[in-house]
Image (cartoon, rainbow, N blue to C red; front, side):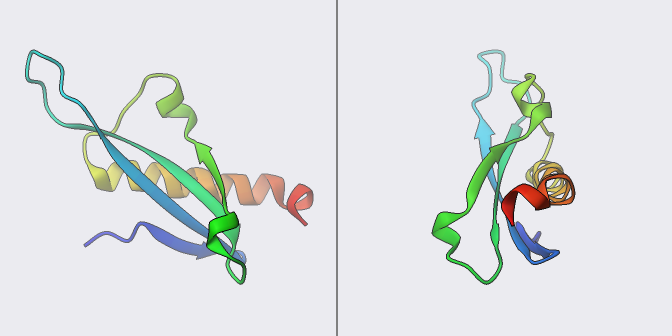
Length: 87
């Protein structure tokens, strides 16, 4: 089982994965994810949701695990580079 959430530097990161519908040619399953970031001690309903640049550009992941990894990585990047604006 893969975890879709983690706590990083006091922020809760939650990845939400969606399956992209297969094309009519019947290709392999594809996945995308978003990440929600909120204070770990706060209400998770108030967490901000962010898209992943790779997926915004039309990219996709070959498995849910890869999509979650990309989302959590992006969430860590957001925390590392945006902490001052959230404090």
